[in-house]
Length: 503
Ligand code: UTP
Image (cartoon, rainbow, N blue to C red; front, top):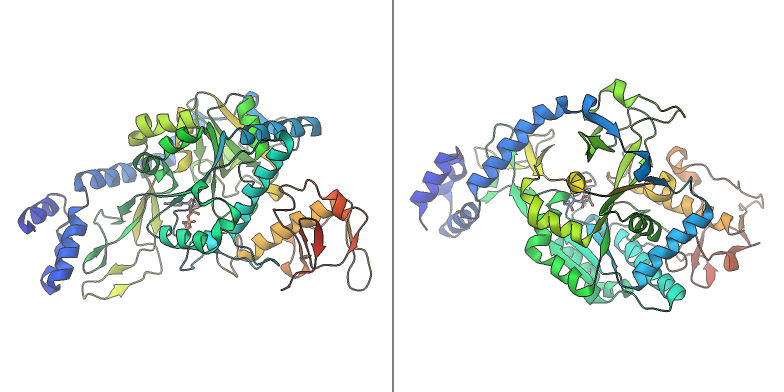
């Protein structure tokens, strides 16, 4: 150990406090701290901090006059397209899947601090009748898509599933998949890789100690994807398999349409290198990032960066001018991703996330703050939109595609209960659309148009769950459901309707 030069380097970067407990440590812990600190490129991380925090004050003043909505010509909408067009896109996506050209790319490296469980979010069970976790729902959607692609083309295409994890989620995720035999997928086609971590800073720029001999670190944001792809050599794996494009998404959206053939078909048809699915922003002050152009480049602008008068602007037809709400569903070609990894990643800036970061106090005790006390530096996955040469935006219906799990039970929104509600509600609509009817225990027919989940008390959920193995997006249910009078709870599984074991 060359303690003297470590000390000097820390002094030069105003980080000497990181050795404040050195003399109290056992020689083993000293070695651990030495290794931990030596692994940090102080020049680099302090520069990130400087740039990210300078950007903070600029970000507030950035936008308005420079903002423009996404041009109509790059936009499509699932609710405004004909059913023929929808079917044609769906089938074209399935053909690409059958040819093995489409991958799914899951961003699952987040710490899920708001949800507050000690395991990866993908392992969360929102108490569906089937008890399926988010990971299982996603795996089964992939299986079903492969089956649909085969039915259409007679070709067995594989959708490789790339899963980005972090130090917090990797081991548990891998073990979970192993224990569940990859939910029927081939283990070789589930490729788990790990993103990098960065030290956490105080607002004043000091690296935080999580323990006397341990630096506080956090994953470098979902935009850490690009450097992780580079170091794990994932692109080479994509090339070897012949993957030409991918659907990237967040782990916490229970409605996510994995490798959605309509979205893939839409972006491919327009020769897009990069694309985003969006939902219509519900009202001007809704806390959602908006896909738009800034100085002619595509970006996601946070709601806090847009002045109220700009957020309230409306088009002639009454819709909000800046209405393309980002839901973290992206399309990338492999060529585009590779160009980001090799040419642009280093120019992407970190953003500041103010968080509650447990730290060691001067007396050596660990404190968990109740208000944000520090900064995690994060890149965002969508920061690469600016490099797109051919962008595409597909507006989809929120109730069909977006219900994120962010918070624990009892919070005001985005909870296990709202996710459960959204999914069951969607499945109820699918069964109705396939010709089924529901009756309550007193024999009265239940409403044909169910209330929207966000406004409906959860006690009135109708427990109707459709296994992804029975239907990917509501298709193929007529044979089972038409003219059936059903009483919840039910589960629709391939070939039959059953009463759940635990309801
Ligand atoms: P969020 O920003 O909602 O963060 O992530 P989170 O970690 O899930 O939850 P909080 O903020 O700690 O409560 C959106 C998506 O980006 C992924 C998450 O796993 C989620 O799918 N993500 C986030 C990463 O993959 N890496 C990160 O460093 C951060």
